[in-house]
Image (cartoon, rainbow, N blue to C red; front, side):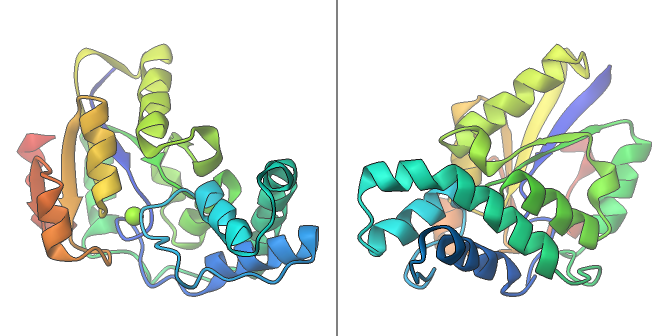
Length: 224
Ligand SMILES: [Mg+2]
């Protein structure tokens, strides 16, 4: 059993500036499955779950709700395939302090898992390309629950079910968006926000995280 569990967001928290490949995979998947030309322009993708981004793209293309629901599973699979076929090496895209921090957390026997809006295969491959995937035991991904709070709950439940953590274990969620902070608050766990994403600083402060850091080099390991 581990003394604590840390749940990590991916984009803007572990990696950043990872290129257009993720957005392009969503666009390409929608075109492949529906024939529609769509865009992520104008959609506040930051902090959103991939299925919600796809839904907004399809709504903007005036696809009726029943058709969106019918096509979404196939679009998600196609998006994962498109991403896997296109993503380049991302080993220089880690956020500041991340590789060293993950290695240090492992030596301290802290359990690490992912809570991300990325679709499952996109999230894993992005981390693999960044050279970070081997630190994480499991994850809760975009298609697994309707909200980020729901994803965090799934991850916590799994950690308890697998006896990775006990009643006394501290649980923390680290992310770069107000949605990450809210997900932690909804689950009654500690929230750490990092300013390494594109969230305006005032928005992140307004979400009232337990701790707000410029980047993960500032993380005080005594709080986790
Ligand atoms: Mg993020």
